[in-house]
Image 1 (tube, protein in one colour):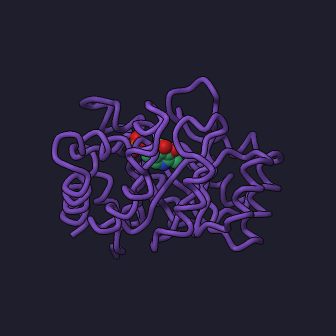
Image 2 (cartoon, helix red, strand yellow):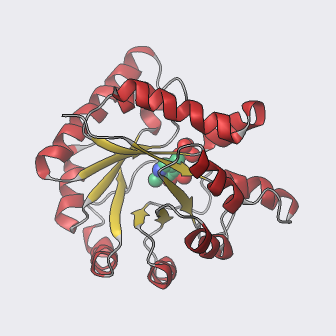
Length: 243
Ligand code: PXP
């Protein structure tokens, strides 16, 4: 049976534009409030080690000023763990992070990274944070996330979004199989990265996916149609596909 599909709006790139000039405009917290008005169920923000977009103060303000759950994207580092424990966001999505990458390229390897990741997952779960692992749609990675004790996984949709034609169909089939596997082993399944108006419907149709996290396209599209309309249109495409 299909469950409702939540939309988490990632506001990182509002901060990217703000930081280009070093001032306060545009304010990612104001963007988060507008996202809620436009139909976002939650707000996602990635505090990167190099603070290239979201700042520590943005995270504090998102926790204090926005009345929707915050999904705190973080690398598994002691610094980020301390910040997460200082705020206790609704959710924390553990992502791989390389300083030189442009965005989160590929999922975490939770199988080979088990020993390193285990203390972070355990500490966050104990603190009451809903932990998700950002992984490739590979059953072995899902089993690894389950073994780590994470209740949620987020499937990386980047390869699906970048592929064309038959390759895209193959990538979609991998995501569908992974979402089915998540349901079978009792993991809540989220998905995200690179989703657009053109690629969202096929993912939204997968009944066991509970949440999509979408950022870059929504902020880019806001240049042409405004942020509120960009989010409303995405929400509508998700809802139509899920119905
Ligand atoms: N989910 C995760 C775990 C991410 O790291 C990102 C990018 O920050 C997204 C979703 C959103 O991706 P995009 O900005 O391409 O929509």
